[in-house]
Image (cartoon, rainbow, N blue to C red):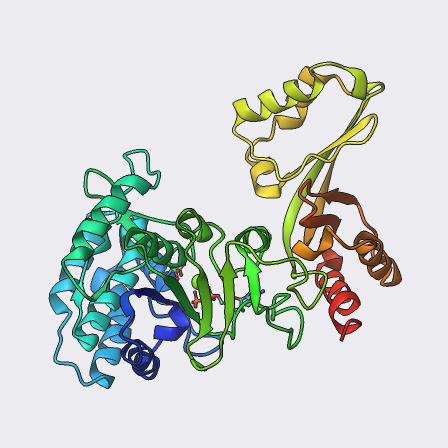
Length: 440
Ligand code: ADP
Ligand code: ASP
Ligand code: MG
């Protein structure tokens, strides 16, 4: 048996957290490969090291400020951890190199990745494990796309040589050696990639909550936690806002069918949430598995007489979006109406889009509605139960929340509703109450 363990930023925010992490690793010899994040927040208003690095790089490379002064608070954080752990390690040479590279404008990805890299060096030293620089084992193409095959092969062959190792999360290198990061929260993805490469039996993802909650704990007070969730359910929920796991992190382990266990570093004995390939029907305590949501969407709403019978209407719009490079979130259609729901920033980046739609589709009416939020109610139990949609609509209607869009996934795994952004938190709370509190 072998396990890959990933520890998030809050799990490695200071020396005390490092000690908990080392205890967890040492208590189970199957926990062989460790993927750390950069130090996160130690208290509510603290700043994550990754955010400090982005700001420092900007100040040095773009504003020309003094690199030593700007970098000092960052080296102090790492030196504080080293001193509190009683290590003899010195990172001074590393700091020199980083400062030099900041001055040479090595890029913001390089800058951000140093948080994971330095934390990985400290953790490897503390555990007595080999440190494997992710730049030597995790690869992107020259276009900046993750190179899954090359990474899989290189990680497998490197790690074969070490019974234990620390591989920093969040970054890798392009063929020319320059550093590239995944999107924010990407250490979860690195953990999944390492688990797949070594064909691990389990990928443990250690964080600061007891697992995946049925709704974001920052919105619903004391939500219930999910015991078992499938890859597909979690993919939907993390895509729609469950930031507890990076939205792409299930993909590498999914092909290898390796389960993920989300666990709490501050309560290691608790069983956490298991993310598994499939789960039997009726294995869920509630009809729904979770409620997630995202803000900041816009809908381009079109009306055209006899749209439904006009051949090629949808194709023309999709081709236009393809050419413009716009990703859509949903395209719910009525008889003579169609809404194109897109992220508001994406729409703002293409100011001519509405004009272009008019040209290619010639609608009778077109308007843009902003400030939308999408809420996804997800659950493998929904397929076999009647009345789920009715209950969602009843909950929203009792709370006086207007539904602007409805979309049921073809798999019957989710129902998505569009509402005004101002109603977002309230909507999640009332749907939670309807399904979870009322079911006991
Ligand atoms: P880490 O630093 O360990 O990667 P993150 O901050 O990325 O941790 O993710 C954990 C956080 O995700 C939690 O502290 C919580 O605030 C947030 N979160 C959002 N949605 C959920 C959810 N449904 N269940 C649990 N946590 C959630
Ligand atoms: N440190 C990076 C971030 O803050 C990556 C991660 O924590 O997963 O986004
Ligand atoms: Mg995270």
